[in-house]
Length: 202
Image 1: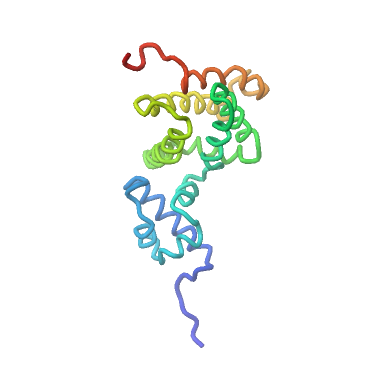
Image 2: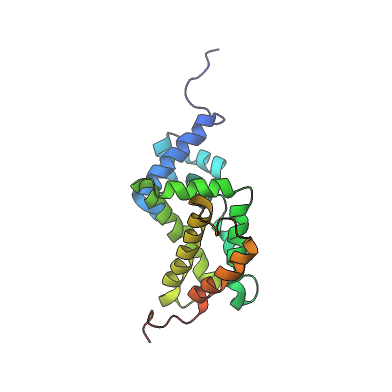
């Protein structure tokens, strides 16, 4: 018998071809504009194969970002409990992720974000679709204020991660996580639910 040539469903190259096509599609068209069918066409595979390897569009997008964690997990952990402790819970969960086995992947992701315009576009889509859209309904914020509040909190956390884990500025880099939770948690809480005089119209 003559063996057929070309990619077969089990070939590892198929998975990478899908990821490559997905990265291009998400960067060029955004999350909403990139369809599974278009990604499959770009990879030269059947759309069913995309679902076989990655399940949902959300999961495929997280894979293209090499995200060490699903933002839904962090958001859920932060929002279960008393509203006035969201900041502390969020910072605690955030640091636990960076200090755990997934920390190296998180550092690699953060470094890649500022590498090229392409990776920056992907990260912007990641923030909008995977964090903002999911966090707003769970936090119960005023829609007119929600996006600015969440991005203010997020910028604080990204800055913390950059200084502690990438640049490794001391004494921040070696400070106990509990110390940082106590210091940063209230600031994040204020961004999310506190009064921000002069920021929003009265």
